[in-house]
Length: 193
Image (cartoon, rainbow, N blue to C red; front, side, top):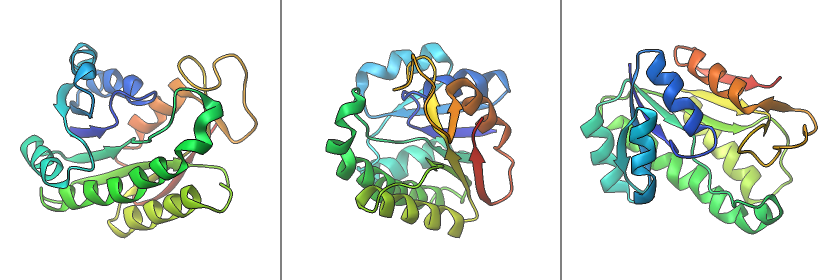
């Protein structure tokens, strides 16, 4: 399959690209950072430089790649876990406006299947919780699959040295499970240990 991976240079995206390629898929790896294009090529993706908030450019990028699947692994989180609260509005925006832009781009390129990540734990009421709910509703309305991940742990995650409270999932297992779910029927799939 042709898989358009939004968030390809992120923590899970970097693991997904080689797994998808190994499984025989062609991966269009989207990043908004020109500095990550080379990394994506080295991982085996066709690098695609595009900002999810540039709706017209995104629609064109998805059309040009012509995917069978759009895989939304986008988040806007800081490098330091202590600063997550400062990013709540940014992360909420990527889950709402960014996700809607991806859905619109998918619609305009033949309506490939959509899979999108959310979290498997209850967020406190606020912009991020509302954004997760909106993302889940919109993906399910398109007949897509919501990938509801536990807290990531392992190399490159916020939890490199310690195992977080449940729900949790080891980052490499989360990536493996995601690849297995490309053909999953529409619904919410909880991905935890």
